Length: 261
Length: 302
Image 1 (cartoon, each protein chain N blue to C red):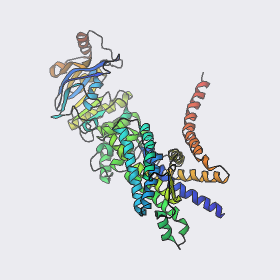
Image 2 (cartoon, chains in turn orange, purple):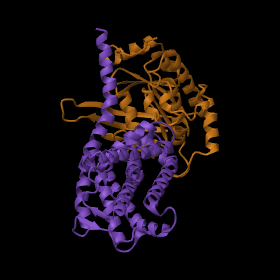
Image 3 (spheres, rainbow over the protein chains, first blue to last red):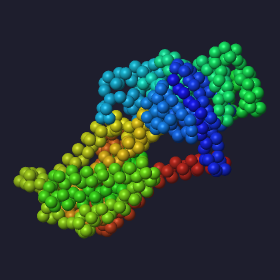
Image 4 (tube, rainbow over the protein chains, first blue to last red):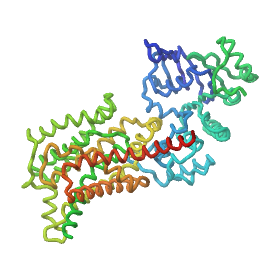
């Protein structure tokens, strides 16, 4: 499904702040994989997502998604097949526009001059009902009036409105209060499993990283240092993970937001 | 009494004509979040192109030509900022400066054109309405038709998929990209449409006052911005049509206040200073209110 081979990215090359953010990173993702990514601060997790989504051009290597080489494709073209959520719930929707208008943009389809039809509204309403947040009765409200949790749930729905080939979740529940985070996470599971989406999720919750999905990647210094799946992953505890990290890097796992339990 | 009526009528005519530029800024400034500083030059461009085409004997074509010239001007401003890396404010300034030469060239190496004996949409309307009770209102009617057409167009256009993408570009460009739309494309389309109305506004003003000079558009961006911000007081929220009508009301109120001030012997040259002060006040007062009241409250809690 996704095949990343030998990508490199160095920010500010030749300056004092030069930083190699991705270092000869290769990764094969199979169709239907749900992969959790963990790593210390600055390990390159978000940079990897940015490289896949096309925020910048990688310095070398190639990225192939579903047989199509997207290495040189612009970000908005990649967005047709890649859905993405950020930690900040505000980034996924336009606050000055109504829920309905936001959904219409995410749904796409139709010509440039097409308008929101009664049928579209019916579909939006059905989809919003699944969120269980009462948003289906507030379709004419501006998105800026919603809470962070509601906006993130809406953003999740928008990113998966047309099932993407790949869904990138960058700590998308980290900025929410625990109750809302849990709700958005269970919605995520529901949608990813329901649609059989291929998904990469960065998380700071080690427990979650072992529980959810079928694979866990540990990143450090711009590369993948552990790729755990199947039997190897099954019996693993959070303590085992931190021990693995120390063994491989000689450092203590130091993500300031990392939840160890 | 009749003086008051003619005063209000003049303010309405001028207000409605300049409100087309306000509607252009409603699209570029309020929707796209681009402060288009090419507005002055584009306004004059609409006037000069419109005048030259009208002088060649095509009063109706002159309106279309003026709008097309506006589209081209907006296209250049947009390309500079989306594809050539020129900062958005600088792109407007550069185009505005370049348009000064273009406008003189359009007028045939002159800085003034006279339309006294030229057929324009206004003279045509005057002929058509001669002998009817509305004969004195031909300027007002043309201006009102143009404004109604523009508001109707905007409220239809901005609810299409393209229009939604244009509105989202000013609101959250990240979200536009993730909807697989290129924000550069929406910026280009938005500025082309906005400047078409700026060009229309310039053409109508010059044809209603039967002359064009090279300084016709000077300060227009500030005047229009002042009107837009006044309009925001009437209709900050609501549908596109309601907010657009608010912008038009802002333009009319601005003209009305200005016309009244003229009656009280304010010199005409003060118009631009007044518009500058209104823009600064409309932006600075809400800012100071929140900033200094927070500071004051904080100091109470030392």
